[in-house]
Length: 148
Image (cartoon, rainbow, N blue to C red; front, side, top):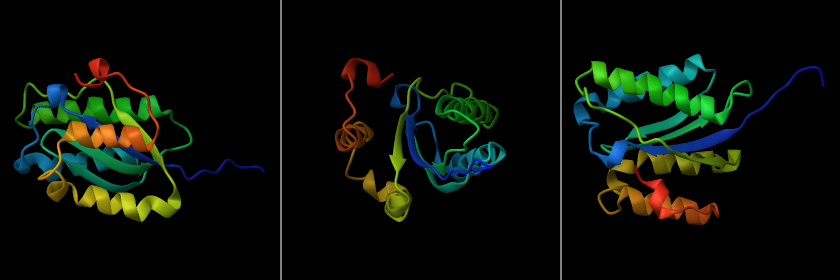
């Protein structure tokens, strides 16, 4: 094959530092748009994004020319700076993240899940949600190091 082609979907989840509810409704949609723009510059297509007050979900493609760590670092550093210049001077993302592969057949399900975040979190806390993802994807973790 003379060219390299890929279509890898990922579900990326990370929280604000110490799971502080710093993302207000006033900035939520603008932050989401900013992150979609950042992903687009990285040649990643965003299927769904939702910024909760204390954490973020993104369903996007993973560009074949960038590592997961670089993708996440670009998103976090640029959006953190954006939040600081848009009224939240003490804004930081947590150090870590959760990232999960998504089969193309499951993209509509994950997309709907992300779009339903507001209702979902009226009944479920972020920590419980992330623990459930760890369980579903068989990810071993240490509670002492997941939350910062």
